Image (cartoon, rainbow, N blue to C red; front, side, top):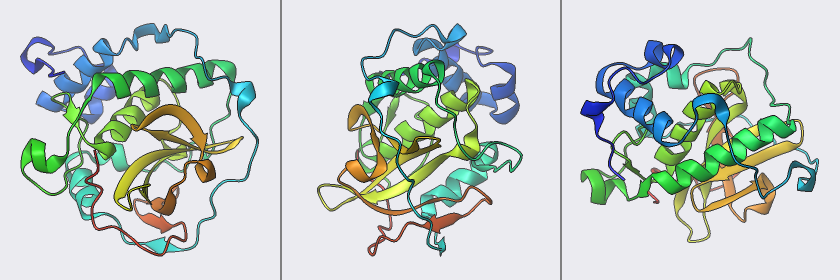
Amino acid sequence: MRFAVSKVQGLVSGSASRRLSGPRRAAVGLALSILGLAGLAFPAAAQTLASLPSEAGAKVQGDARPIAAWVTFCQSYAAECAVDRTEPSRISLTPATWATIVSVNRRVNKAVEPMTDQDHLHVADRWDLAEDGIGDCEDFQLLKRHMLAEAGLPRRAMRMTVVIDEKGEGHAVLTLVTDRGDLVLDNKTNAILPWHRTGYVFIKRESQDAVSWVSLGGVTSPVTTANR
């Protein structure tokens, strides 16, 4: 699905407008409109909150080097990378919050066309908010986080995370740090899983305390997350 940017000037909410400008604001505004986030009128989710176990989160094991494409992303989308230490570091999962998370995850997975950066943009790795409706793994997760933050969830508790997937390739997911443990949003599945039940090797994620990254103990760190 390609987004007709020229037709959607001014659709972004006030808070998003302050963070994004020009074509980026218009494109994300259209994404919000298409995904039906106005009023948070979501359908009932098949995956229930009651089905989630309460488990420990992933253990942070020191500092880590960020993905190079993330550094470039943060230069263009500084507000998307900013860390507000006054925000909660965990999401309190209520039925309403859970319904919002499940719906955003499903809608973004359905709306964005998966394509590698190499095929789409002829570059090895670029992070953005899938402004033209096309993206690879990190673009899905960044858009989900943007929309969930617009819905009122604390950005500080939603951390971009680098893993090694079932193919042995670098992959990006979104970790939600919650009072039920660390949950993973992924474009490969609509299921929201506890981090250690994904089958992935967890390498590193954004820090909750600074614009930086922390290690999760994985041995091999990919240079890119170019997996669609």
